[in-house]
Image (tube, rainbow, N blue to C red; front, side, top):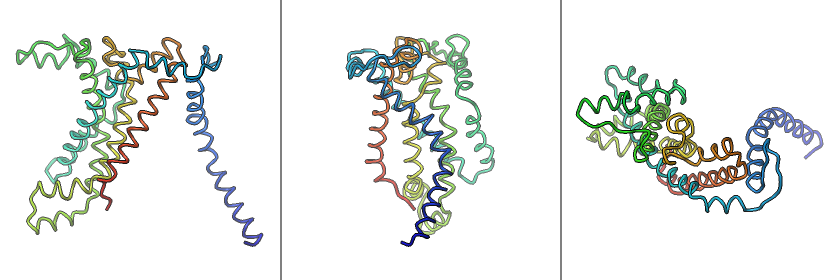
Length: 297
């Protein structure tokens, strides 16, 4: 390589780094530095203001597994994921398939199904807080019309997690619907026309063409729904504040409570690290198992 060519490549590399510098700075300040501090805090006693007092090793991690509250938060988090993710994906897929049909008024239904995306999580939770009200709530009034006794949706340990899960499903429908509808509209019409000529019915097309070709989008949607479910916070904070009796105390809310309410920054950081590892492990399992079933065009 001659000197002139080498100098040119170094100059191009330097220009590339210069263009990427703002991104590196933003990621360093808002991502890499907080991650490093979280790991540091998890091995330290931390004073108010984020001042590291002393290194304590695995003290906080050992305390986690002696904490019945934390162990309960893990159980509740997995229950919450099992309640929300399958229902959200199946319901979103059902709505997307219906909206993708060439029916009269389908554009209107696409707009209706997508409209919730324009409402913030806090506003959605506030609306649902009224719906779930034990005496004035819309849901109990409808149940009362059919002679069904009122249900303490948010104040009963037996119903609170299910109620928050329902709220989360509703809040997540629009984004999943838009992603799945986009995937459906990206499937070539020629495939359906060819299968019709071959005598394939609706269900054959759905299971032999639609779902296999939609599998990359379904795979992506599944991953982001798992991650979002583990990171759910806003609706928990507004609807139940982790109660009653820690029935909705997900790991994320436990981290918030330990750090900002109790000032146990080291203990909360250890919980954050464990949550990161759980999310990473679940995501890797999905890539290991789920990607085999993905059919790329």
